[in-house]
Length: 411
Image (cartoon, rainbow, N blue to C red):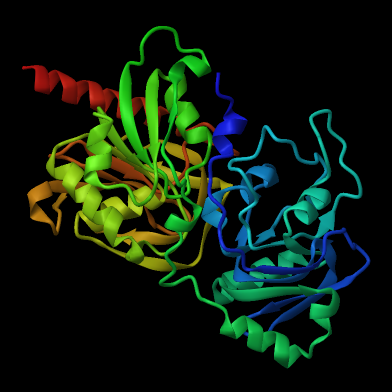
């Protein structure tokens, strides 16, 4: 039996944006957070000592910090936790969503002095040090969050130890010289190098798999194939660079594209692959990055949000049922599609499409539903790791879509 931990250990290494001076925690070492617009916050080192560069974003979850930092969608981002007390339950192997921590840097207000939980295997500080993640503590994360909300997510740097001794002008110059998120192609960096299979028998399913899907790993979270497997679906997880021939080789009943980091405008290869799948009328389900790729495949554009949606308390309206779901989200880009109801897709061969879900915070597109081909997607994370389970039904909806498609093929 292959454990979820082993599945999580299949992600390839990403080129880091971190340089470290020390592999030991140095909580009394001064540290500084420098934002692209010149705003500076001074605190103390948390985790490894050195330099970290990335896009500063904030995450609003009150729990689930380990799932947050191990989510590949946070690659090349410095995450500010709005919850004031972080690290109190420590970390363990079981709760990681991938093989490593992907955040470029970590910003917290009050770091726990010691973990206190029966599942804890080590402290969060020790884990950050072990993986070379530069962080900062004892800063006003509320002020940082308000600043990012008012001025948008922006490039930033965390500097501690010798790196923090440079002048503020020199530190700001390093931040401004770093790569922006617009135009970043990151899915290939966080994806698996080789395909692997997640079997439903390993998660309590009795008998033969009910369905087989090909899942493109663009930064997939480990619980996603598990949620499928629990429902009797065999999941072939394929690298981000997979071709149509790779997909056809597993003879799938359905096709899935996962969440992931970077700018969807760079995902031309994945858009082309999805169009080939849609042309073949293979049922499709996409999550997060997979939603943006469906939008592009249908001919819609994408754009960068001012500060994105990141956290486990994001309200979404299902426009068909009128039901409000509290969802887990992590994205900085969105699909630019009309809200007026069913409309013909710009790529007209795919027929009609409608915006199925919408954010109640800012009216951002949170889901797409194709009416003439078997395809739908959502911008949020129904695997709920961490997060609420309001959207778990979407996995069942995809199974129903595959079942319906099979019935049509058999007639």
